[in-house]
Image 1 (cartoon, one colour):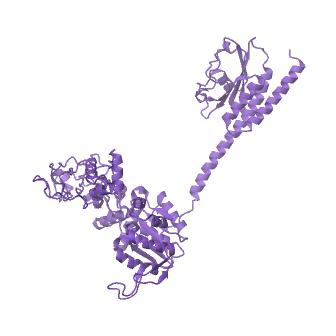
Image 2 (cartoon, helix red, strand yellow):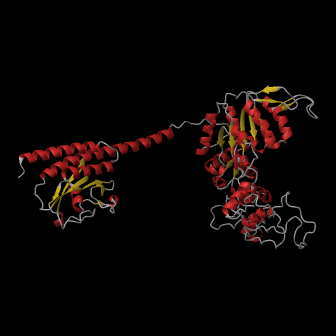
Length: 632
């Protein structure tokens, strides 16, 4: 029986251990690390080895979350018990402490967590207590007492001490779970409140949108409008760049001042300089009086320069001075004129690529690229297609005194189109369909793609073949081929094939002929992807055959190509006069690319002009087809 001195020493040590455990539990927010430190303190202070802490998960299973003396190859997160399974499962089920004097003789012991392979050499006793919080059992705490002389038989003090430790652990676990749940609740509430109380962007005239990316654009318009900063609007052709520029002007303090628009691509350099800066009387032939330029007319207001990327290098330097100094001279004049103009620029070109190739001045780029607004293409805001279609239908009806509507199936067809011409193309499509509809409702047969007259399909075919069409971004997916079209004979130039003429429908014929296809043949579906054709409409069980691709014109030799020798070799009769002998037929893009690079001395810019592509497309294709560039 232990003496009074030993009991006092043991009580003092237990009290010190409780103090250390309480400090550890309140020292960190990492629950698993904290529990491991608690087990390490028990092992160091009271020789309670191989401690285990199990916590009950949401599914009711008891999982090991912290262990002392666990083998390194035993992952703790994969060790779990069900209620009533093993010693720990029985403690969880009964909610009562358990003492096993000798683990080697206990039938419920399964050593699932490992670390107790030495039971034949020494006696290990297990003491386990439930971890409770708010009267409910949420876990189990177990420790081992190891002895070479056999079990002592006195475990009452260990049970009382471990119960106190388990209570501290239970309160800590409950606090952690409460904090975690409150944090999740606060995050959900914050997200909900932000979504509900998100500042409602005031509508902009003629801008119809509900998609998140366009709502962000309108929010950016409202933020930038009150300031004088230069704005650069970027986006594909037909996305509404001028509409956004006018919205910025109308929301700015300059809304009562003039809004002047200039399309830089529509005027030659000499005329563009006169239009922007004005000219003096007699400065050139035909200048019979002084003429104010757009910068002078827009003073106090906004000047919108559309297609800014198409101006020449010489004019870029003149424009840069106006932007930097806010002053200019008229053509033929010497008087410096001050102006107060807010500049808004727009382009559908890649200005960074133009700067890299020396086609656009870097200093002008940095001067106009102050606030950039990117307009997403219509294919990236499909949620707005139906709303835009209804808006254009209503607009057409008001302009023509009609009461029009559009059927839901027609809206589904419009929603599946790729719209390479963006909103402008959608408006034109609606206007064409409105002129063809009957009974005041636009239906699928009224759409151009249903009549094999989709104007965007040809653009889409050229785009998929790697050619840039206006403001459309080309695709570098290679040259599509049509298996139904036989390849041209070797040595003969390939000419662009025209789209087939639309056959006239025959009344009373078979199903295919009734829809306008001769001999019951099916017309190809719209190449832009809407899937509406004269034979099976979108969703029909029988798929349509692939549409015939209109091939691109075969690239002609560059003007700067080497001169032909005076005595050329005789050419076969089948070779056209405009096609070099060594040019490949319109086959894989890789072969045409290698041919162009070899012919131009492996200069990418010249090869791009020869193929009718941009330098960026050529560079991308070289990397895509793993073509090694030869250096001379």
